[in-house]
Image 1 (cartoon, helix red, strand yellow):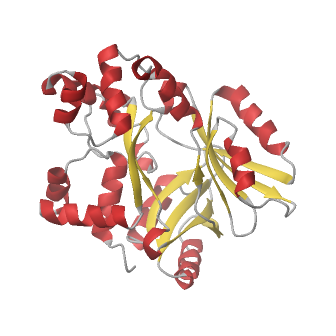
Image 2 (tube, rainbow, N blue to C red):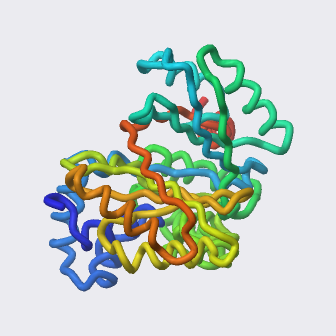
Length: 324
């Protein structure tokens, strides 16, 4: 690809795991100078690939699960108006049209009743003919209460997730040492070592179990000339999600980015980024021939619109006393 190489990809994934990772740490892990890291990160931001850095509550903080849904329709659904109608549901945090006219969305729900409520909402939408829903395998993290001091630090982080310890200390009138300890407590005893909640090896990992907050980034992998697309892979019972992901990482070190696995079916939604459409078909064909794979079907879409979702709404509730 013309704009992204393996180093760029590594920087993006490291910052997705923990966007507070310092330039110095990134430089050490990638074997580059701090100045080289800064230049690459500036370029990724300027190109629009990295949109912004943000703070997310863990799913455990909401007692929630994540779901991916695909809405089939009679051909009448189009335009941002329909996506915005989806966005009025507080459970839905991202939605986009696919090239075949269907809609892909991500949502968070609380309990079986929440899943049922979300399903009813989607099926009752005018023009929707079928709803396919997959609860995803994700790390839940931990659940805890926050003190007033911790909420003050958290408020600063919602303004700028990469805000320096010194600046947070100045704004909160806490000592830098106290600020550092509070941020460390958000991440849990395992610290801020990169964890990829969308990769199988992190499920059940001590570090991710301990985190009540995630320091992430918003990205647009279609920016800067890239083409992001999904390959929906169904595998047979002889294989596993982890084996499929490891095979893809080995075969497509630059093109394969991450995967969402269904908790109810042997299906995984794999995200790839290429420079040209013509590069997609060979990837799909090779994935189809991979060990344990029964089928591999491409899904092409348009950039997603993002909405608050349950985690953002809960975060706003937590910070009401601080912001009022």
